[in-house]
Image (cartoon, rainbow, N blue to C red; front, side):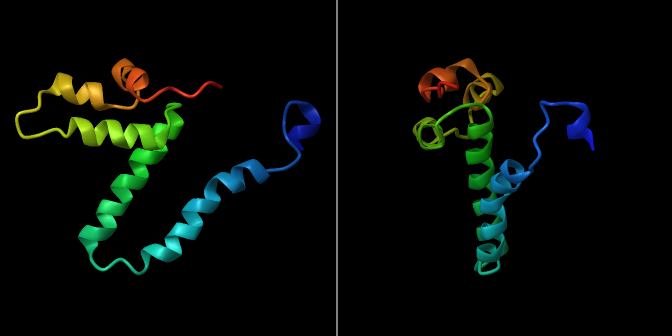
Length: 99
């Protein structure tokens, strides 16, 4: 009944359901992960892609940015901050999408 009180509310929840569809389809594929480590690695990549999307970055460009930067044992906290999708350096390096 909320949509009757506020005209900005949508009559449908299709956009919400469509945003969850890839995760639901992937869930069936994850049943076939060979190992726990493989499943964890997949989830790390999916998380990085979704974080890039949330922060308005092109996922491919962001993953390429991370792989080009490849942190090591001697990486400082400040350098890790530059790799975060919300950092200004990441936004510049990953061509922030226009909204």
